[in-house]
Length: 283
Length: 283
Image (cartoon, rainbow over all chains, first blue to last red; front, side):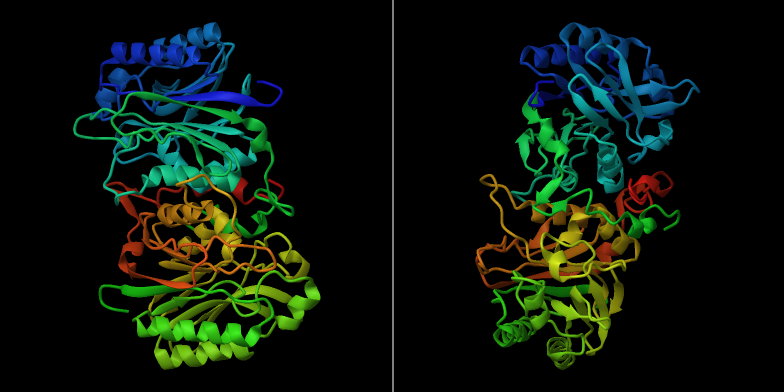
């Protein structure tokens, strides 16, 4: 990371095909290579970018799962080390207990696995195949800054993003598969708007890598975006339907300054002693 | 409230002048009358809409403060009863202990005071004059639905909005004075974007009434807005610089349905057992 803390962040919006593991893996690898050639230092890939997303049932998901030491992450480790980039991507993980997890793996630029995060907030039929994670979003010191990791629907729980920010995340990397929905003309997808808010209430950078390509009747927002601590997009939101890499230069030093006025700081101004109801069970 | 739960909500974006209490009070009363004449059932006014905002010092704020049984709220009670409307407005409150509070008062349509909420998250120099509140945002059953109340900068703390939603708020009413800042062409003010996210992550309606009119060098967003549970503006954001009332019809029944897919519910999907860090002191 440069003295100024500037990092080039890329989100590679891909179009995986369900079950076509080898071509999907090759497309992800090519996207990492391409992003690195453009100078990217942090490369974010979509959720479940090698298996595909719309599984028929748990058996199909299991047939496409692999452990963290399987070929997908091993390939990312080789690429990360060779290219000197951090990779954050979504994996259909078979964990050590034999459970399936909708995971995001962070590989540091030296090829080590920095974090394996298991999605805690599952969307729609994901719970047919996946066990929900029970660990908070990891925050990891990488060669290119302090990175937080979560997956897609997790972003819609401001409590979860807050935990990453309180943990010191400067850049939150989130593989996603955002299902498309109708919206009024001229309006951004609500997923993008929520990402903007996630960034600005915490004064962090957020990079969401979405997917594209209709899969078993499901279409996607295709709104990959890198948002700055003011909540403004630096790159993207991408156009739906496009296989495209969005790239933004992020001065991560900005995310270490939480001031929003001469006397305000978005984290110090919190009143955690009054927030007990947010963490109360059955609340 | 109609069988369908439809409520007409108005935000009266005013231009109070610091210290000109009588004209400001008259302008607020005229705006309530006008909104009611247009059919509004819930009328939201700006923060500190009678005193003005940019106080020189605590003494000036104190000279403009009044208790809840003072002329401003008494006037709103008379109007609310006569017109059959709920009024939520910002008051420079002198409390029973002699402390100044940046408060929002909710008056129900029968003229009773339903809630006195004291802003818990103070902006910039507000703490020179005001003591911060220590009570969560109230949620009150009114003639026109279950309403939550908070003030301006409170909206930027998703924990606070969540508490109101967990308390059953269908429509969150927030008097505000949003200070203006530069933003890229084509971008909404981040305050508006955060309001959209507040609404959609909780599936509630949010009505923010901002002010306008440069005051001692401070200009304002002037982005009064009513947002629906999908996060889309139903009315506004208003144009900065305009004294204007934005009006939207809100079907509050929508805010009682938290489902976002066949198997997802934005409140039931929370993992409060994992959110302890959000409420931890010094966290």
